[in-house]
Image 1: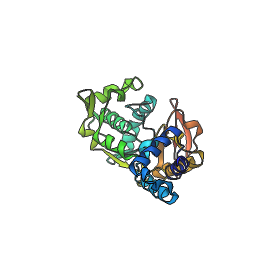
Image 2: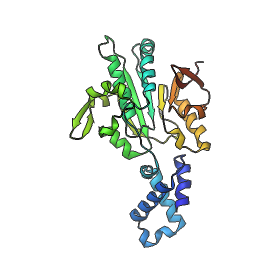
Image 3: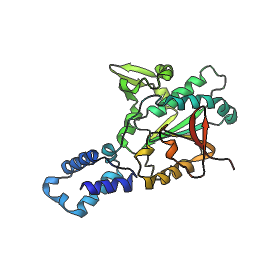
Image 4: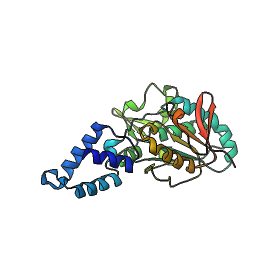
Length: 267
């Protein structure tokens, strides 16, 4: 069954699989779907079960990596903060639209919101914004909606921005609860990057530290879906270690203050 799971992971999610993760999923399927009954020895039954667990997102809980924390790779947040004055001037009364793709448990989306709120503080005309944040794993999206995190979500990497986070994190025993006010501008939902992103016209897309998990033959498809969701002049920000190997179609590689990113040209 392990080979069938690996093939399904590439077909449905576009990702490479770790043998240990595949084995855990196989054991869960065996226990959850009556392996002792002998049904799982029939190829047709196995394929039906795999279709169910992959289409529902249940398999993603075993096969996807959900490492995240507040203000990870802080250079990207310094870059965003530097962009906000010109964005605010160009936007007028319209909202800045940002997408956080493969958001895992939500720290990236909340970090973006915390930064914009810090920028807005004291401004006569605050910049309005909306963040769409999605992941293929329904369990981590539920965690993101709840907004409750362990102290590991605040790490040394990103410490220079923690002052932006503290006003929005309430201590709950040994954990932190994100203030509900931040959630008003964020929409968390389940989405598979192998499919087109449902919304279009984003000003900025964050897609960081997930590209490496996709198979080489699926990376172009993922980047094409991201590019299609950006507006003209829109910016794609990827993980520091991923930019060199990425070539989003129809986008230009750029560098500003040692931050490498991609920009969709204006017509």
